[in-house]
Image (cartoon, rainbow, N blue to C red; front, side, top):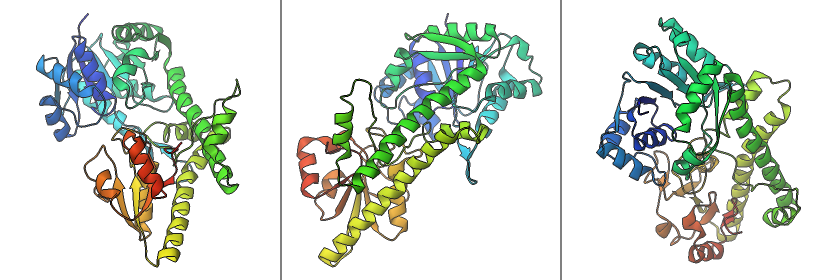
Length: 405
């Protein structure tokens, strides 16, 4: 059954979801407060970097199945896919669901009995119920709605594939809501669609990202220990992973992105007395970026002692992971800005963005012509090409992401 769908939030999850639904024949209205993004989408183009997304959006707009605006409209299905950051400050960052609540208020005048209201934003436990509370405060009879939580679980760079192929978890406020919303997802998801209650689905999403964070923290902590002992951590991990029951992840400059770097704090904030391992993992991963800065500063001191001048530091990569343009919570960006704040001359090579408000972004070709201190922070494919890898090795690039392994 083809439906009218209103997707609130046209970022890295909302726009791919809207484009995918439009490709299946649904009439989709995408909503975002960013007028530039809205205009870009209505022209058949995209404002973010994601493989294959441009083709989906172009086709959906051309066929009249997708359009965007800055305010919602009536629909059969409402999907909320807006950011859920945390409040800065304090020993334990607190979840900030203000944008989710504002998105809920924006759709309240258009919600009718029989509608599906789906929250996809990563949220602390209880947020879906708060969505229902907001709707009731506007006089909406929520007993006549099917309200559920269905978090995304996709990998940036493979979103258009994983939206279809990955299993999904649907947690309704009622068993009937779980069933009805799950049936909607089964219309475009080839993976299993698993039904549960809302609180369980909310905790499941936080658990997935916290699990990743804890395991990355182990790899990052190991990398610092190995460095102190003069051991190649990537060789250690490769050999250890030959054990049939060991699968250590890869260390990096820290942990970024809107999910793994944020969501564990939602669990810690809800139960700080018991979430000790999860909190420690967050602290280890945050510390890794500080450790990288210290290592670069030491290398800069060595440069100055050997050459009698301060080096230009060229940071290779700003995104939070390879081959995307997403800078949210990026440790690479944090490291570059920290080095600049400490008085170093910093340039950045980020193949997926053209410029940055606070950093001098240069091309890779121009960067390697310079005598500079090169710092590998992100394993973008451009840095891995054999001829480029050889150039960076010849320049003694500091590798914090395993690009040379």
